[in-house]
Length: 267
Image (tube, rainbow, N blue to C red; front, side, top):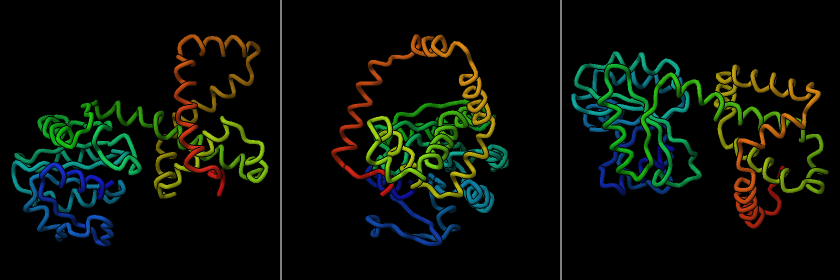
């Protein structure tokens, strides 16, 4: 994500510096590298793209180095403990947190959704962060910090857990599944396997963080399996969704996946 962000910032006209203890810049080989202290003292916008545990370390390390009127933010998925760190930043430094709601497969920030989380009492930083991502072409929404931390348990953590459970269940039958798998299997297995481009430590952390939503999911699954009127429950669900539109989009995506790779199942 960091390399993609750097590339988009270059396209938007920014001069970009990168700090990475183990740089692997790929198509950004012409970009300027800097040590962390130099970058912190000179940059107008500082964006931290690292795992959560490293975000906190870097924020603390550069806190007394950044200059006034600079903007400091991170793009971590889980924000646990970060707001307290931002609140201790010197007055005159703008701070916020952001969450790109997509992965590096998007190839660009342009056209994709970014959530910006304001720090309580320092909301102007979120306004500046929103303007920055809008300059990159993102669709930006300012959201409540606590609500974000609660909702990602359902919108990110729960789907990851479902992927893990599905793969653990189907893997003993993976050879036969290729033959017997239909459209639903193709779609779900592709999605589930794609989640594992992320590091297992991140997946573990995300699932553990989302344990409340996962527990609720398991309770509702058990309640459905135990219910006498399963048809009534299914009809109730059908009443508040647009199944026809979803079905059309499902096949549109499916055709692309099948055309792109006929043998994506457990290769």
